[in-house]
Image 1 (cartoon, helix red, strand yellow):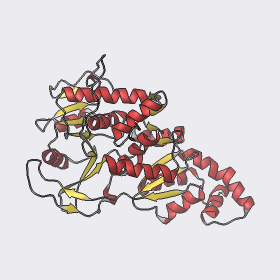
Image 2 (image 1 turned 180 degrees about the horizontal axis):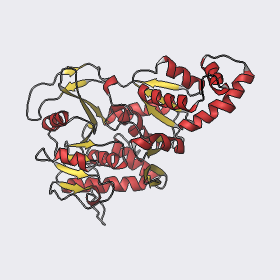
Image 3 (image 1 turned 30 degrees about the vertical axis):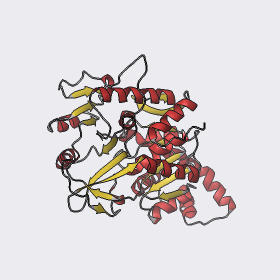
Image 4 (image 1 turned 90 degrees about the vertical axis):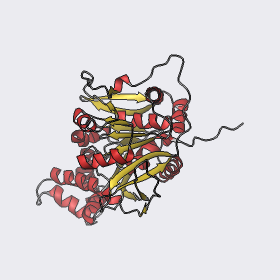
Amino acid sequence: MTQAPPSTLPDWLRHQAQHRPHAIALRHKRLGTWHALSWQDVATAVEQLAGGLTQRGFATGDALLLVSHPREEALLLSLAAQWNGGVAIPLDPHLADDALRSVLTLIAPCFVFAEDDSQIDRLLTHEGLHVIDANPRNLTPHPHPAVTDYRALPLHNENGLPPAARPHDDAFAFVRHDANGHLVEQRFPHATLVREAQQLVATEKLNADDEAFAARAFAAASQARYLIAPWLLSGFRINFPESLATRDNDRRELAPTLVAGTRETYARVAQLVDERLPGTRSWRRRLINRAQRRQGGPLARALTWWLVTRPLREVIGFSRTHAALVIGPPLDDKTAALFEALRVDVRAWPDTGDWQRVEHKRQAAAPQRYAADGASEQPAY
């Protein structure tokens, strides 16, 4: 009997762990050192986190909010929630207090992941939450009884863990406030994410040898659509920088083959290029300007490549990039011309979807549908 193909994100995680158990799945940087986890390591961690969530009362259909920048703990917890049939809802950690209070009131989750003490203090003002503390510096656990240290959450069972629950329809949900101040959400079922990931993998020719860089805001929907789901399907390596402040240096060190960002991301990287070039009268500046205007013969293009373009690509971490994606609105003309001169083919992928008005979970009012008007309001890098 032919086995059915994986249909959910946890299914794809199990698939990778079974077929490529020792291949590196993700790497994260701590105190200047890269640490690696294999696909078997990731699957085991997710299973144990799922067991810990279940032990604390997390059930099918429950929501896990993640108030965090990109980090491996948030990713593993997202998959653990989905393993238990729940939905992961990443939130922008810079969300204002009033907006956070609105999310907690309307979504009414029981579990929230927080990346630092400042976020924990904000969350503990709202009663009834079970807070999971990332505790990145491995300090003494937080004393509040409602807080569980991330390292104490996994359930270690020598006899193995029960199989994954039947996943809830939705894998991820993303929330924001619209122009009228109403909280709206966009939900992504497993089937949608798998279908879109298959399309991206085929179009961009992604495979297990690729390296991706997870510096984009975790609370952006495109993170799930164009990074997490394709990672699980194709089996490439995903890398987390030490912090947003080190992301440019970490990207240069890794030289990823897959880069996904917004037009603001690429504009920021273009500014780095501009800062690396000497004054307007220098020969390097003139060469790159001519390349942007598509001027010069074969000799000029060769000199530009070896003397200017190739070193600049290495400086910004694009030396090996073959899949450069801009999510949402395309690049402005100036930025597009620069990346074309650098011989980086940046291709646009949509960041649209239906936004639905969030009502209190105890209210029975019919949801109101919203048009896909929020792509540009997703958090940028």
